[in-house]
Length: 349
Image (spheres, rainbow, N blue to C red):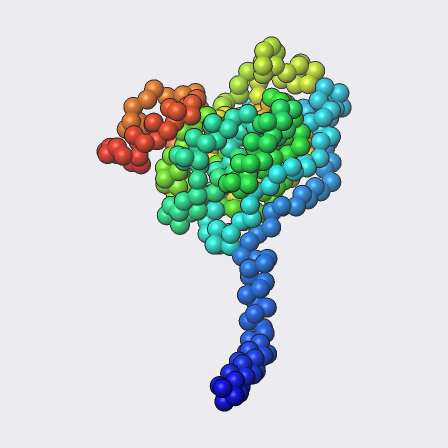
């Protein structure tokens, strides 16, 4: 018995000795692994950085018109848009290192806290992570505040479950969609400056991720060209949902812009757009606002007919070729996605 205890004690002493020797020898490696698991395989995107924004009156030109944006008029009619400083309520989960190291295609979806069924349908179809020809798609839902407590709790729960929500503390209103443009550009510029492409659209659309990547490979070589359904000098409305006053915008027509239902931005254009968003008055229509930012940043547009921002009659092979189709409800989206995914069609995509 005493021999057995002596042997056991000797073994334990040897094990402790070996452990300490290993700790001394491998201390640098332990530190490296510790850093990897506690900081760095992840990109920390949970902090808000809000640089100083200095807005001013500007004069912009295109081949047809000159546009004057008077800061004092914008300040008088839409003071909140001009003065708001981006402040996050919810951030998505940290970005894994393997995602950052790939060509990242962000799928940014404008949504409302009340639209939980739409977000659920999108996650079940095209708005999820996948690898496509060297690109990694990464969905993000862009939200603001609502006064309905239940909706806010739903959003908080969704972010705990999926980690795909970026929410600011301003209220969900039509004019405040322009703040989503500015604040999302700020967030991208601060935390993901190396993103390859950003797709941005509404939460009632069908999107073909494989088609988007194919389109990028064929037409995405210019770092200063934005892609989508191009609106050419649309008439400025003086009534209804999209009205702007003559004082705010005296021109009869807008500059070129991409329809907000869905468009594609190369990552290298994010910086110039963000710089423009810090300088220009915030226009109360988000897609027109992007047009002004693009003009100020000297960016160009490419129109693509497969961005069907005004809807499209459903035929399975037509949808298989489409890149974006606007105006699709949750149940219809799931049905269409299932049918298109299993369909065999001729032609591209």
